[in-house]
Amino acid sequence: MLTLAAITLILPAAFQVALGASAAAGLIPLSVSISIVLLVVYGLYLTYTLVTHSSLFSGSHASEEGEVHAPPWSVRRAALVLGAATVVIAWMSEILVGAIQPTARSLGLSSGFVGVFVVAVLGNAAEHATAITVAMKNRMDLSLSIAIGSSVQVAIFVAPVLMLVSLVLGPAPMDLAFPAGLVLVVLLSVLITGQVANDGRSDWLKGVQLLAVYVVLGLTYFFVPEVLSR
Image 1 (spheres, helix red, strand yellow):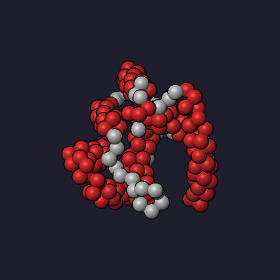
Image 2: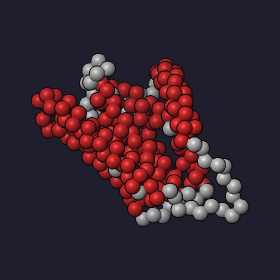
Image 3: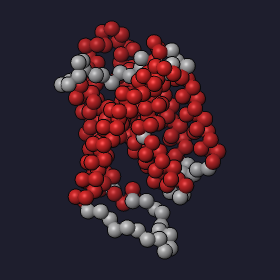
């Protein structure tokens, strides 16, 4: 799924670079077509993980002896809690975005660094904490699923939805031709994720290397001038 996301980000950017100024006429139709394909794939992905092959994602970690689990919630209760949490998170996100802009200007941070790293880290703090917690319990399968699942959701669901919604609500239609720097970062992330996850093993040295890569990318965006980060 991450490979599909990387390809769909690379192709519109390559289309724009290859055709130059003449790409404007076909970029929006191309983005709409890709968005529809991605949403169809996301629907099939949900069907695969929740219906046809749900056993593959139930986890292989056996319960510890004497461990007591709370009774599962009903579907209605879980849906209500999820809906309420979504509303609260959306409200908090608006507060975060409004507060971070003047803070970034006062600290001299570029919009690229703030958008790619600061907002991403703060916005996904709950997911990061959960992934770290389950990893400390030796549930690396679940930890990896949380990290990759979040990226897949943004790449093949959130981005296409925003693109299609922009046709109706936005001041101008959004396209999927992201800047070359962002496309390169996504491509490198997919390659690194594949290399780390393919052997099915984890150790502290791999973690150090991944953190080092993240810090290097953050430093790169930190030193990119504001004009170039847009």
